[in-house]
Image 1 (tube, one colour):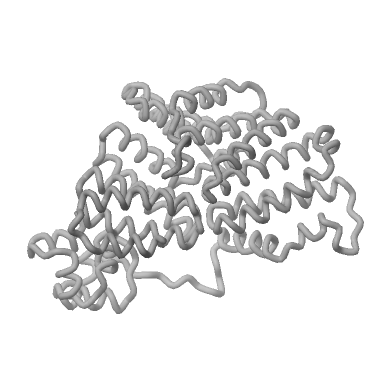
Image 2 (cartoon, helix red, strand yellow):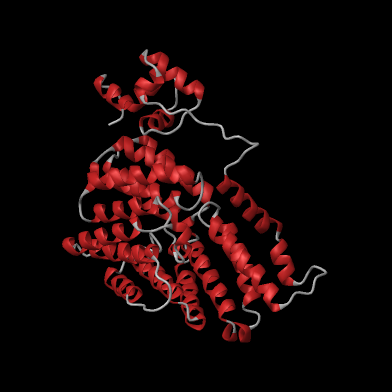
Length: 404
């Protein structure tokens, strides 16, 4: 429990009452209690009310990033966005410029664009990613003969379909996701790339671990089918090894076991996955990008598994670690709509209304930033459960209108 929440509990004050006394919004007090960065003026109001320093209260001050010396990863992101937004690579591939390109040059540009899409797919809104990926795939598939004879072209097309499958999930297009994964599998076989095949089987496995369309019939989790895909991925032989890819497959297998309430098998697979990920060196791992396993995803997986197994407190701790890691890497993106709805689910399991409201607010912000329709549908379902659990809380009805 944070120091702020401890002090509020000692005063027997509700969140709304305490926020009113301090002179800040309810959402701001919730953010402060959960360790989120605050503006200087907000910190001053809280410190004045309690008569303590920001260090004593455990408050975190927002940091202004330098505009003259951005971090290296931010520079890479901006370069990727410039390339995508400007459309220079796509314009060249489409032949709208004055240059006549060889096939090798076209593939080099296509490979660069796929790399840019991998870098931006976590941090940008899914509609933009889907649109640019669609343009790229349309170009690549204009010449079916090339994809059958060039392993490099087939690999680029397979990766493009994987990225499109990610976007399709968040655009609430389950049929399109599965179609893209089937195309990715076909091109991965043409490319003769074992790591790509493992990635496709991993994505297919997670498709059946997830409810691909919350609120729609026919897309509930199918862990038995998911488990078979993960086993198939782990059985792929040949090619370079990737600890990140093995960790992704094992973690998916652990989640499938947890959904089936196979406790021992889930814990065993989870331990194996953590060992593989601990051995991962992103710069030297050929499957790191394909595995789609940034640091925050590992505790997020653990949280889902723990929640399925009824280990709710451990799930909450894992989510807090995932949230810390996510905000170290990014501010926006699709990761927000995977993280915060899980916190809502944990809050429901704990019966913690304050945490539920705070996670709901963060989930809505994530939906607005990422434009994830999947996230919107999932949050709607969780909100209905919250309204059933706390029917007297009028604030939840206000949030429902905001989601719409």
